[in-house]
Length: 182
Image 1 (cartoon, rainbow, N blue to C red):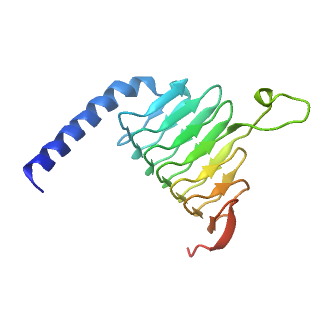
Image 2: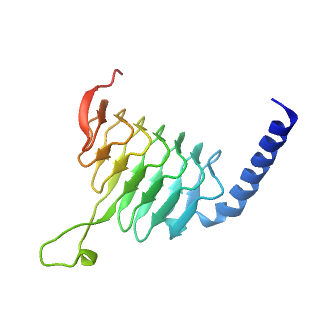
Image 3: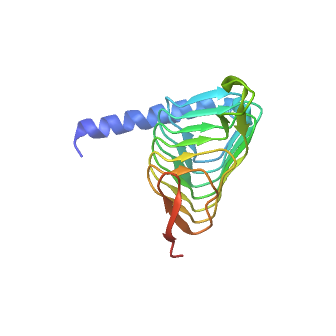
């Protein structure tokens, strides 16, 4: 590692520590060793967000919560540019969960209902991602979904139905590929 790389690394670490302590009073709870990188946008009530220990939220993520809650466990990460939108529902993310970059976890979504305007029609429901789950890059998780413990969701998948524990799914819409070896 050259001196410039080391200098940049030290500057970034100092920035992260300062930013962490500036943001910490404005989050419902954030555990030891967790951090929210600069550039993460929080929309709505930040006191409805609870983050466990050693969890990382990388740059350019959007975390949106209205009257709902977002509960995040320990020892995981949310990759660059991902979106969590709880609306009035709850998004629960378990322990040891890795969510890659550019994922969208949407508990509130507009849709079509006969006799209603599009802007008046919506669907909202809780989303649960259990422990030890891997969510690949660019995955979209729709309202009302539970992703079971130990599951793997392949990159680019649209999850519109529950994922059983220890299964690997992929595609649009998500389909089971095989069981995950425990």
